Image (tube, rainbow, N blue to C red; front, side, top):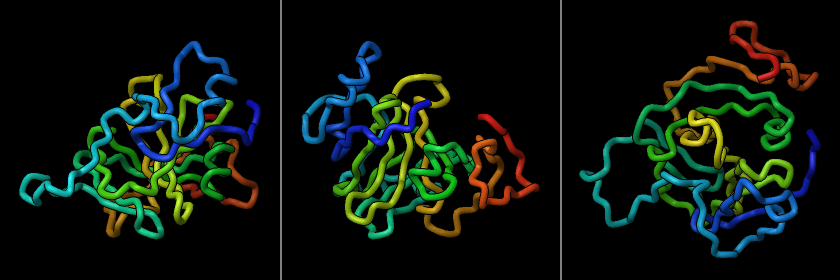
Length: 194
């Protein structure tokens, strides 16, 4: 798989890029920030209106935010235990392996997201990486279309969760790609190439 540094960025959820199955890599890469194009990439994500009262919003199962606090979120539904992904892309995106939990997209509520931006790699425009434009913190990972268990789920970088999270690491994936400086925890089950 090519490790291209090219990709497109989108500034916020409404202007996310809608990826079409029949687009060429060039067509997907040509989509730029600021174009008001509809998107199903973040279908189900819900922004919490400032007018909603505490009574109308259930107590979140989890909450979190980026380093500077410009992007914050709550999870109102089941949240998966943490998986450590050692694939080359997660290592490049986070600076180590990606420790991520996950939830259904419909259960993630963005409380503040003015600085949330999305990166779409040119070599895999079906995925999106959510990050804060202010502090650069990695926050989310999402598949646009694909396997049902992936396309209706959003991964959340576990380090952005407010503590105590109540979660534990239950699996390490793509361990065949783990960095040579990192020692895998023998107590955590692994999947080498997936």
